[in-house]
Structures are given as structure tokens and as C-alpha cells.
Image (cartoon, rainbow, N blue to C red; front, side, top):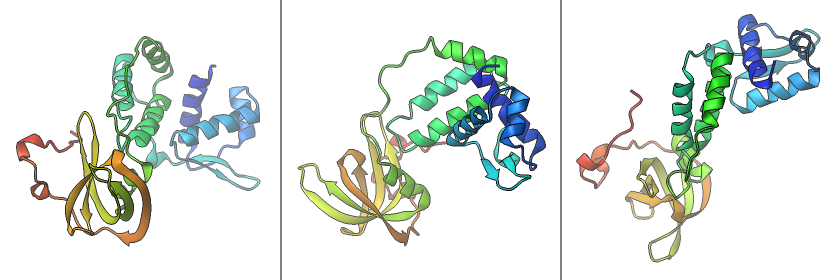
Length: 230
């Protein structure tokens, strides 16, 4: 059994017995590898976002939260690679990190044969460029989800720097840049901050209470397309 198949099988084994634990020694015997190999595999799955934790004690072991994982996914190799291409194109966006963990979760729950074929097909796909040219600082990306006020050092178009407290409300993105849409306390108005002009970021303890409305944006509505999950 190769490592890809073993990672898939590990998830399914832990899902089948959840919420009971499986020890590294038991799993090592089950998959005919060393306990150290199992520990490395579990670590890789955890880094990929699979909700596995270790229960200490003589009867402890590794436990998987079944409610927060996907069952085996019946995607074709082409469908899996299509999703991988789309997720890789998130580079430079506020969701690049979550996109990477989503892709690893997807691969982990593919049927073994489908995973092998998907890897073969992916090896024939080559990308030029990563996506929008301007990256979004991780602290900024996290602040919109966490609804935390930020203190940012920002350079205007002419290069003049300023320090200001802002309330992150959302994002605007096009093919060239990403913008943080936030309420600027310095000017007491809604502003769009180009993320490549944000020189420093510090989260503050205050929580954002405002909500972003499409009518608040000084942009013709026909040019703005809200993101949809359907």
C-alpha cells in the first residue's frame, strides 16, 4: 500500500470506529508499518485540516471527529483535477490558505483508485502564474472572518504613509488587485484599501459590529458580482 492509499485508509479506519480511539501501535500493525510512520501520517492529516486528535492514557489513541469530515467522495479524476486547478488559482487571494487545506481534504477522501488516477492526470497539467498579482496579508484575511478591528499602516497612491484604525467589512477583487473594504475611523467613511499598499497590520481587541451592504459601495451595481456558493 502506498502512502496516498494509506492516508485514505487511515481516515476511513478512524471514521469507522469514532468516537473510540485507535492507538499508533494498533494502526501500525493494521497497515504493516512502524508506529513512527503512523505518527507522521497522522501529523500530515492534521496539517491538512483533518480533525484528528490524540487522547492520552493507557486506553487512548487517535480519534477522528466524524461530524466534521467528509465520507468517501465519488469524483472522477477529471472532476478532482478541475477542483484542484480552481483552488490553486486562489493564490494571492484572502482564501489561499483555506483553499490549500480544502484541496488536501478532498484528496484524502477520494476512493484510492480515483486518487491514483487524479494524481496521474494532475501530472499532465501545468499552470503559468498564480492569480491576482497583489497578495492579501494573512492577518487581514483573518480579520474579516474574525470581525476584528485592525490598525494598519497604509501608503496612499502618492506613497504618503499613515496609521489608521479600520473596521474590516469585506473584500473586492479583480484580475489585478484585492481591496480590503473597511470603515476608516480616521476619515469616518467607508474606504477600499489596496492590499499591496498595506505596510503593517496589528489586530485590536475591539469587535466589528457594522455590516457591509452593496448600496454602501460607490460602484455601479452592474459591475459588482457577489460571490455565490451555488
